[in-house]
Length: 373
Image (cartoon, rainbow, N blue to C red):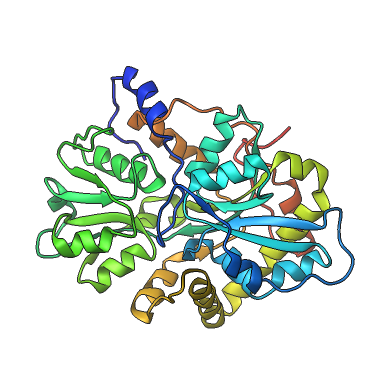
């Protein structure tokens, strides 16, 4: 979604050095700079049984967040482990995209569930040598919610203070684009202009809203529903801005080294993902409860129904990585002046997923011309 074009390109190098833009993955349970291998998630994982595949263990990274429901539910319910047999699932949870990418590059995890911006950044920063996107997991789950006493229409957003999770993250880019399409001007780096874009950690956004320091927020779930529970009003669902109301919010990535050395393990994880997604979509109430139980295990606190229910409703659990929307998101960041034009050719390898989908009698998915080969 095109954001206002920044002409001061010389600032980009300095900003890129100071802050790894487009690397903050989406999580509403808290952003952080450190990866956390959550012991409770490892303890909760079902035991491996049967014959191991080509690797004894597969280390899977994800976030304690509803947009990572495939990982939450698939691990909680033992669906991944069943597909892997004697190959043990070793879960690791993260609170930020850079940490997960660093872990993947270091071999601390093999496969990860992650947002589009850190996937783009991780791929381009290594010249296309670090990872591949091998599947989709979720679409949607992002809303503009506002103080109804101050903002009644979309035009009323002008002149107000609106939070996004962090400079250059996926929601920040989307909001900058929306501002640009309204014909308003905002400096992408400072957030100053016709709208004040206030970069605010999701875990403190509800407190900032209650204190009146922001008038609204363009945020992922469940932060959006937490704000609504505090009296905010949903003004816009980002899904309504995309073709077919779908855009990627969570991808599945894999280390290229692990993919080359253990294709059978990768295929088993993808079978687990497809079967988990099928179970989630067929058993909404049970799946929602399972995801919330996983969140409680990981964070110590389950989401209350007034937050969980609307948040869950706004997220679509899918296998398709929606490759065309990844390219669009990258283009929007470039137009905002937050990213040099990336070469995303080869970022996808959907061969293993399409093999799994075909075997399951489900439609195959496309890579929008950004696949290997």
